[in-house]
Amino acid sequence: MTNDISKVLISEQELDNLVTKLANQINLDYNGKELVLIGLLKGSVVFMTDLIRKINLPCTIDFISVSSYGDSTESTGRVKINFDVSQSVAGKHVVIVEDIIDSGNTISYMLKYFDGKGAESVKICTLLDKPDRRVADIEVDYSGTIIPDEFVVGYGLDYAEKYRNLPYVGILNPNVYS
Ligand code: IMP
Ligand code: MG
Image 1 (cartoon, helix red, strand yellow):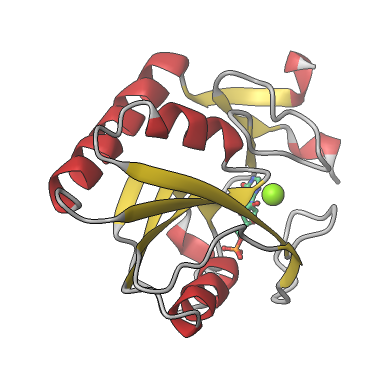
Image 2 (image 1 turned 45 degrees about the vertical axis):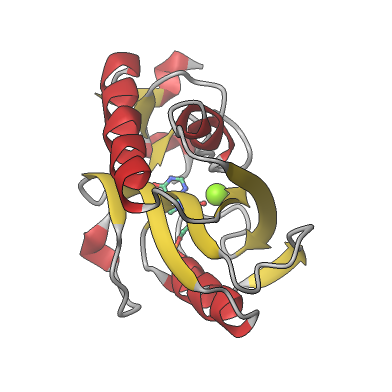
């Protein structure tokens, strides 16, 4: 499997540092507020479980499943909700937890979605930000790190549902998908 990875981009230790940085920022900003962390399945799962263990505020977690990519490496621009959160977000402070923001279409849709459900505030926390191919006009509130325009996998991120279990983030060898 590791032959499919052309380069380790972010090591386990570096990931831990990024997650700690993001959790510290959230801990400061949401002190005294009712916080709901909403993970976008499935890519955010590994990041989410690490992040919440570093959040020291009362909070709840939830998940929503959306798809935009199918098995390709480029955004279709369409977002479909496969299943929804299990609680009302009305009056609550929502932080959407995402593995990576590429075109921004997914997160732009989610911002409007939770806003429309009456959330008190909606912010974005992404582990990785790939701004080169950004289409949507969005502001990323919490960003772990900016990465170049390469297709990456591991630490929850997949290609065709595989590689999510790698403990690091690596660049997928293009010969896997071309
Ligand atoms: P966007 O709607 O184009 O911003 O895409 C966001 C979603 O596309 C993310 O939640 C990922 O699931 C997926 N995605 C974008 N870039 C990558 C990548 O480099 N590796 C794995 N998944 C990616
Ligand atoms: Mg994905």
